[in-house]
Length: 106
Length: 161
Length: 263
Image 1 (spheres, each protein chain N blue to C red):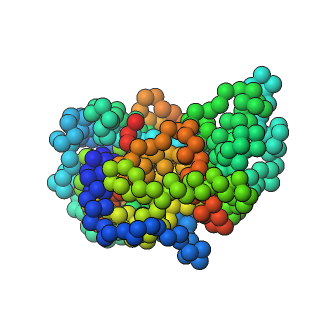
Image 2: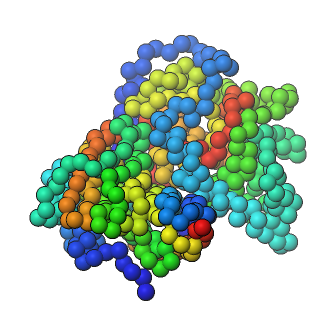
């Protein structure tokens, strides 16, 4: 189970633009590195990150091998109503992790 | 039922999973020497993002250190000037590079709900090079900003085990 | 990054270009001692400073979970003896490496954890650099974040620290280079593109951008010795702990900033 950290304000005013910071542990092996035996180390990356807010997708990112290990992705979203944000990372070798965070909007 | 952000028009522009990128990866799996991206590859990648529309310079700020201590982890922020209203907003932000083994870095899709068109992440840069960010607007226009980054490497590197 | 062979040739060439060194290295005056944090670019410092962006914090979270996990036949967790409140274990990491009375020799935090596992939890020790051991060490050291390194000042500790100092000042390896020649005499200068820090272990385990992962001081010392073209010590060699003890004593008073981020 990959370790994830989600950082966003637990409470916000309606209409307020909030910063969302996400961090996940993952080697993001690019597939371009050569190991000590001379062979290419196979690619192993997260390819897709999505965030939904009460079921509506508010952010989507397609990642490449050029994203650094332990991907940090920060973006903004408007606090529209109270509810749940669902964060999902998928990638090579069947990698899949989902985390949720609640937000209370006044 | 999740509403996807992507209209079919924008879906064409998220190129990382299209044949173009897949072909790039296939070439890169061959001996490393063949895989070097070139400034032409970056221009080709930008052409695939932008299609027939013209690319204008402006509105996009790429915030990246000019001199980087380690190319493995380069912090980067892209900001696009936009009211982010229903009528006038950023639909997608793409980042491409000049000298990594392949030109794509990240493609993101956003919408008016973002409130602010800004993205921060950390990227890998294999060498000193230019990094370009392209923003696709709701009116179909494309805007870009770029930065030149000098990449240094550590003096005492580790044996890969 | 695949620049590894290039970097080592570059390092050798850069070192040969350094001006002749003094016959012996001088300690850094206390007023001039600075953490490696201060030698970094602002962008790298920003990664360390933001708990939401610092990849080392993922490992601290892992360590927190392990701290509370039952181990061994009695299912004892670390927390069952040491507690898990906000102030439990603060200041402990600041005193390590420390002489273990029963062993009559210093142990570092990793070895202390393993002694607890074998003696009190009655379970197997964790291998050096294993994910779990790094996580537990990071968790413990993070509990001392912001506290000054505080190595004991008794004669027995001083004896082992002196042994570590001798290693630090001894020329080694194919380049006939000592740690002191870079880190006492030439800190603040550049080696290749990188600025030479003073080599204070304030932030271990730390997230090294070069590794793209978090690692221990033991791992970093292995890198240093390999970079100097010297033979790294085996992981369980007493020389390593002597050297770690000397480095911590040399850094006394500097504040712990685990999990640090370094290039």
